[in-house]
Image 1: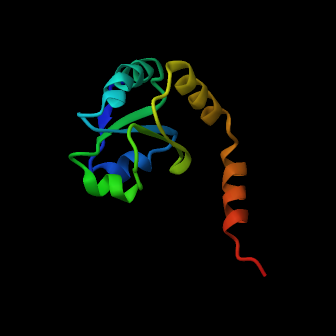
Image 2: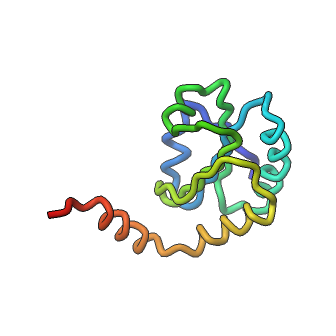
Length: 123
């Protein structure tokens, strides 16, 4: 599946998708971003069950600010609309594949239960 361009206009639709969504926040002037692009595109081609999106932080400054992007590239992984992973820096292909496998293996009911526990008011 080709990498989709994430913009302010389609971000909610992309991020609220059921299943796995991985977003690469990048900029055209960023050397590590350019180095990561082929890895990201190759992963998109082989992981057809995952939605891959790319956000150019130069064109989408408000969106980058909304996600508190401070360093690029930054990769975020969501599943069923829940943010599971966010990390700046270049990821090797093996690490990216490992992260996707870990995200696939999560029990989302358990993840949601833990989120609810963590956000519950304390007495």
